[in-house]
Amino acid sequence: MTERQLANSQLGFLDYDPAPESATIARLQPSYGLFIDGKFTDPAGHEQFASENPANESVLATVAQASVDDVDRAVASARRAYTKVWSKTTGTERAKYLYRIARIIQERARELAVVETLDNGKPIRESRDVDIPLAAAHFFYYAGWADKLDHAGFGADPRPLGVAGQIIPWNFPLLMAAWKLAPALAAGNTCVLKPAETTPLSALVLAEILQQAELPDGVVNIVTGDGATGAALVAHPDVDKIAFTGSTEVGRLIQRSVATGDKRLTLELGGKGANIVFDDAPIDEMIEGIIDGIFFNQGHVCCAGSRLLVQETVADEVLRRLVRRVEQLRVGDPIDKNTDVGAINSAAQLARIQELSAFGESEGATRYTSSCVLPEKGYWFAPTVFADVAQSHRIARDEIFGPVLSVLTFRTPEEAVAKANNTNYGLACGVWSEKGSRTLWVAERLRAGVIWANTYNRFDPTSPFGGMRESGFGREGGRHGLEAYLNV
Ligand code: ADP
Image (tube, rainbow, N blue to C red):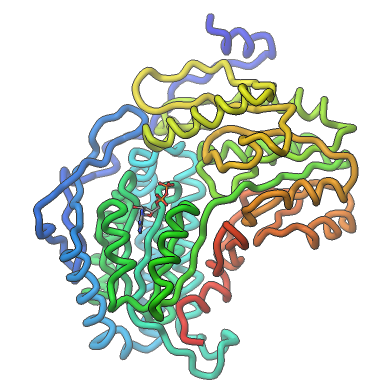
C-alpha cells in the first residue's frame, strides 16, 4: 500500500479507478503550417518545432517557426483584410461571425478540451468545465457589443485601431486567444495572434474553426513560433496595437520596444496574489477556496492566490486542514476525469518551481508536500504548502507559477492589508470573511486590479480583468475590454 493509499484508507476514502477521456478525440494533424490569409501555409524557412505532451513527453504535432518574413506576410494580410473588408463590415455583420465562432467552439468543445489537456497538461476536468466554455462565452459576450459600440461609453462613433498584434502565454491557451481576439474583432480590428511555443495546438484548431465560420480571409492570422516571432510582431511598423499576456520580464522588453513609436499597448503580467482569511470565515468553503486559489491549473495562473494570509487565531486549524486537503488532491494523468492536479507545462517551468521551492526550505520555511506518487515520465511537481513564511523570503516575493502555497499570518485587518500590499505586483487578491463591512474595508485598501470576496479564481467575460504596478496595465473583459481596441 502506498503512503497515499494508507492515508486514504485511514480517512475512510476509496481510491479512484482510472477514467481517461479518449485522446483520439483530439483529431490532431501531424503537422501545422502558419495560418495566414485564411489558409495554412509553409513558413518561409520551412522550419518546424515539436509541441509535446508534458504529461508523458510524447510529440503531439509539429508546428511552424515563423520568421520575420512570415510575420511580415501575416501583418500584410491583416492590413489588407482591415482596409478592404473588415473596416467596411457593419457591427451587425461582425457580430454574426463572432456568434458563429462561439457556437462552433461549443460544438467542438470536447475535441478542444482534449487538445488543450494534451498540449498543456491541465486536468481535462478544468479544460472541459472552465477553459473551453469560457472561451465560447467571450465570443458570445463580445458578439453582443459589436453592433452597440456607440453605446459603450466611448463617444458617438468610436473607431477601431487597425491591426492588432496579440501575444499569449501557455497557461490558458485557447481562453487567452479568445480574450484577445473577441474584443478586437468586435471593435472592428484585424489580428495577428502568436500562441506560446509550448501550447500552440488549440489556436491552430481555432484557425480551422475560423475557416469553418467563413470569417473573411486575413481578418485573423495565427503565427506560431518562439519569443523571436513575438519580438518580430512587436517591432513590426504596420502593427497599431500590441496586447501581451506573459511574464513581467518580457512585458518590460515589449514596453521598451514600443516606447519610441505610437503603438498602443496593454500588458497583463505576473502576480503574487494574497488570499486573506479572517477568523470568522466559514472554514469549509474557505479551505476549498484556498485550494482552488493555488492548485487550479497547477498554479500556472498569474492571479493565483499564492500567498495565504491567515488570521493568527485560526492559523493552526487552517494549516492542519489545508495539509490534509492537499493530501487528498489527485495528482496524475491530466486526461483522467478524476484528476485534480495535472502536469507542469514544461521542463523549464518545472526547473523554476524546483529552484524557488528549494529557497523556501533553505530560508527556513516549514514544508508540507503531498505524498502522492508522481508519474515517471513527464514534468511533475507534488502540491506543496510552506508554513512559517516571512515576508522577506523569496517564496513570499517571487512568482513561482506552480502548485506551491506560502502561508503567512496576521493579527489585525491593518496588518493584513499591509502584508497583502507588500509586493511589486498588483493583479488579484481574495478576502474571506462573514462580515461584509470588513470585506469592503479591506478591499478598498488592497492595491490590486481584481478583488474576490469569499471566492477565488472566478472569471466571467462581463467582468474586467487586469493589474497595476508590475502586473501590467489595461483591462480585458467587460465593456472596459473594448477600450483597448478602440480609438477613444
Ligand atoms: P513564460 O515565462 O511564462 O513562458 P513569456 O513571457 O516568456 O512567459 O511568454 C509569453 C509569450 O511571450 C509567449 O508567446 C512567448 O513566445 C512570447 N515572448 C517571449 N519573448 C518575447 C519577446 N522578447 N517579445 C515578444 N514576445 C515574446
